[in-house]
Image (cartoon, rainbow, N blue to C red):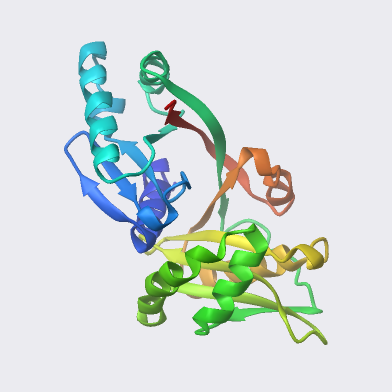
Length: 263
C-alpha cells in the first residue's frame, strides 16, 4: 500500500521545480519571491521528527516557530506552514502556532487513486496530450487560474528545463474543431511508483465541457505507461472541486491546514 509519505515525496518533488529550498533538521522552507503571496509556492513543512515525536514540547515548538518566522522574513515571503492532520502532534503544534499569531487561512484535500481502480471514460471530442510549447502552456495556465502576467517570466525560466526532465510532463487539452488550447496540467513522477497531477486548469469560457476529465484521463494513461501504482493530487477546499475528483474514483488520503502568520 502506498503511504502518505510517498504522496508527500511526490509533492516535494513538484515544489522543488518552482521553489528555492532552505532545509533544516526540524523544517524545510519552500519559497519563490516572484510568487511571494502564494502559499502553494511559499510554505514551510515540519519534520516528521517533530510531528511524530513520542513526547511533545511546547517550548521546542515555540523556538521552532520563532526560527520559521525569522527565516521566512529574511527571504521576504509570508510565514506559512503546511500541517497535515494525520501526524500525531499536528493538533498540538497547530494550537501553539495559533497562540503565536498564526491563522488557518485555507484547507487542502490530498486525493489519491489506485491504478487498479476503474479507469476514466474517454472524452472523445477533447484531446489531451504532452507539449513542449512552454509559452502556450503558460498562457492557458495563467488564464485558467487568473494569475497575474508578472508571473510569466519566472514561469518560463522554471519550465524551460522541464522539456528534458523525464519525470515531468506538461499536458494541454484541445477541443475538436477549436484552434485554442482549453486546459492544462502538469504531471510529476517521484518516486517511480507515484504520479502527481498539478496545475489542472480550464480557461473560464470552456468550463463544464469535460476538459479536466480529459486531462485526468491522459494522466491515468501516462501513469499506466510508466508502471505507477497511484496518482495523487491536491485540491484547495475553498475551490470546491474535490467532489468532481471523487466522482472520477479518487479518495481522500488526508487533509491539511494551511497556517499563515497574522502580520
